Image (cartoon, rainbow, N blue to C red; front, side, top):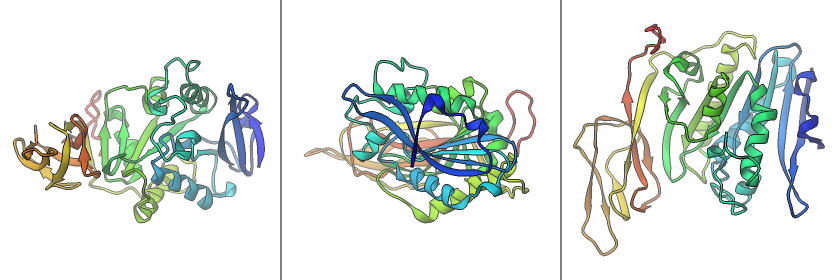
Length: 325
């Protein structure tokens, strides 16, 4: 595998190639370096540049497997444009099988737009952003749910992206308005359409679900003409205009009596938390919605997310009123 310094990378000049490179971002103070294995598939003619990234959190393996499968599935003669795949953006967290690295305790996907010179993880995030993400036509960021299970979904920053998001065929599109220094938010600030695809929980691979999401990503490639074939986009997909995170009222052992995809009503008892040597506490839904995320780990600390409730929305562009369904 050849090594390339990221400052020397000229993706736009690649044609008719399918390569794996070791992309060297910068040197660390101990003499080692931060490098990421990168796949570049450059098609037979010019077209969109799409970047798919996984492994920003080192314990989220569904996305890493999907990125691997994308490289296995796509040949350069199949596409018109360029596909860049970063399967493990945070190798130090991945080696520890952890959300973040003990190197600096920084969450990579909360680092975009921050001071990239202070911590290695922030520096890596912002270097990748400046040299790859900012030059992309579309960005696809793959994640899992950490200590809880996510129903397969596509996350966008604004409702106007719903039409494009439908092509991933996840069945659920969630509008996340808040900016926590995420890659998707940073890309959208620079007018780059960006999507966060979430599936399952950390430290696990759901192979069947990954294959389904892989097919959805391939369908998106058809929709934006990276693959010159017509897309086949599912009907009846749901838009969620917001989501409510229900925090644990106390620490202890959690048992839920609702699951992914269930609809709940405000005031409904959805489970209980049994504190250590304490009396069980009912967990009550603060509002009505659909369960998009449910705690997988059986132990919680006060304030940990127990479920996420999606708020159903109308399938209309908030600016034009145009039906996006």
